[in-house]
Image (cartoon, rainbow, N blue to C red):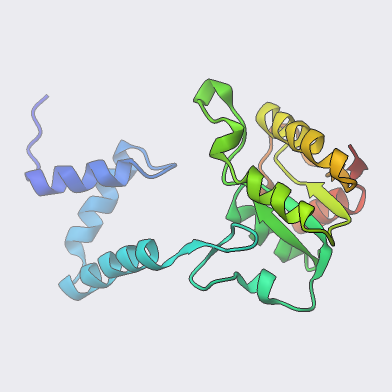
Length: 200
């Protein structure tokens, strides 16, 4: 079937379609919307993308995304640094912070072990977690990966690495649905999962 759209519009649609959760129709709708925006708005949008990509990087301590040396959680002196909550993505930190109950710090893996997707332990931020624990001062590591096959496998793998270091490793209690995503859990369910976590 012939495509009657201008080539730059087709290219823009293809770029939007690369984003997670954006299908072909949504991508085309976004591309057409960009064409209806004022030039200054499009420029501001493009600049925001470029600026975020250039200035946001990993926190030197927890691997969260930040535009400074350390993320806001790591900079907060009121946080309990003896407890580290290990999450898959920076979005999961936002979910825990919404509960208002967790007072420890975090470590972001940026993915889960998945041999089928060719994601191995060395592809994740596991070494820096082990290095943090080896530095001392951490008493408990909470494995807060999603309740999926990959999440459970990743939690078990990290638990085996950390236990010889003399740190308590726990797993969220799951009133969370199996196969669910932490970022979509409501605050009460997430808090209860945190409060009733199990030793691994």
